[in-house]
Image (cartoon, rainbow over all chains, first blue to last red; front, side, top):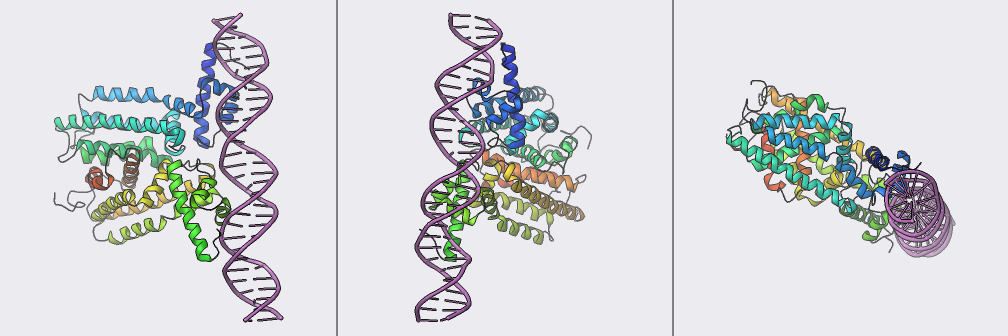
Length: 213
Length: 213
DNA sequence: TTTTACATACGTACATGAATGTATGTAAAA
DNA sequence: TTTTACATACATTCATGTACGTATGTAAAA
């Protein structure tokens, strides 16, 4: 069954990305063949090679699917941080963890990036993109910490550069622990309790948490 | 050149594990063929199939290489924790990060487990082993936190179970950020500064840090 | 002490299958 | 009529597993 119109072709493309996402997560990237994806999507490999140059290209396009959502979250973060940086960052991190474990598309792609692909060879591009994304994210966090320091919300002796790296580590690590042992923690419900040690170590009491303490 | 004696055969086995370690890190697990490993080790695939059942078996044997060192560190941790749990845990975490980024064998294997393998299919066994190791590690951490609470070293409102998960996340995450962006941080030198936010959020001032504050 | 009977520790060769890329065919859309 | 959006078919390249060969070690029998 050949899709004819441009809209139908776009449908096919999205269907391929969707299918690849599921199969990559279930079987791993290198163990999922283009034939697997084509069959599961109800087309042949010809369709894949029409829309994408090769497997790596398909993989990268799949990763780009979540870029808009992530960017939107960061845009909101930077915008709202003016008022109360610590509290905004706190809410942002909680929402981030919540989103990752409740939006299936996000869960799968984050899961693939953490546990289902090897950052090497033809995936080098994805690796560089990931590192670059980490770098930008770190810069945003660092600026937020600097701004929080100006507001007097930061604990004494905290270095914004290092604190931003720690926060990245805390977030990535929690996601990974959850992916490896989902039975051990409910990331959606426990996000606050899992993040609070770090936050109470970095921000002054009362500056980041909603409740009075 | 055929190794004849038992000692020479053991040499071959170790050489294969060593070579696999390097190639898995450089090229990724699934993109490294047994022929690659054999050639780099100066033998043929016949030698590999003599010593190991298949690639997954070789992979697991390679992971087991670092098990003794890790176990020894944990044994020391539990032993020394009697005196001062918070301070012992602090030193242990710092040493852990230091070891991971300074002992090449450890760096490679941890790097492989984080960025160079897909936990799926025939690697399922490695995945389960990893999850099980995480579980045991979490139990040890949790008990340490409970003991610290008895000693009055824990901050009020900290739940040992959740705090142990957070710490696992913090450690794993820092290692991963370092692996992804080694140029951004010197894990060996900055371990203390990267871990201190978490520790000062969990333990009472003065209970974990060597210096008086 | 020599010989015998195996076991070790690989090397070699082949059979098989899986995955990729590409060239070509084709029907409908524009 | 040309281009689009695929399907089909083919060539080729690995990677794996296994069967088999073979030289050496080794322990016991003779």
